[in-house]
Image (cartoon, rainbow, N blue to C red; front, side):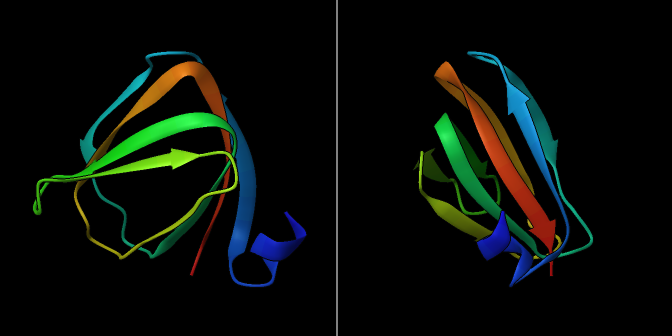
Amino acid sequence: MTRLRDEATGCYSWSNGPGDRYAPHSHSYEKVLYCVDGSIAFVLEGEGRRLELNAGDRMVLPAGTIHSATVGPAGCTCIEGRR
């Protein structure tokens, strides 16, 4: 969390269970996200690109990017903030 706070504001942690899904959506801000535990796969809808994040991986999602996500088989814990 200390590392994330050095590059983003409004930082917080969240967790989801295995197989949980997020429908396509976007944010009005640039999102910085670290996968702390487990795994989660993001689909960048406009590009048709899939990003698999595992514990220790980092992602920066530009503002306005439409994306969906599916949590991996062991669930996930992530921390994120805004830039």
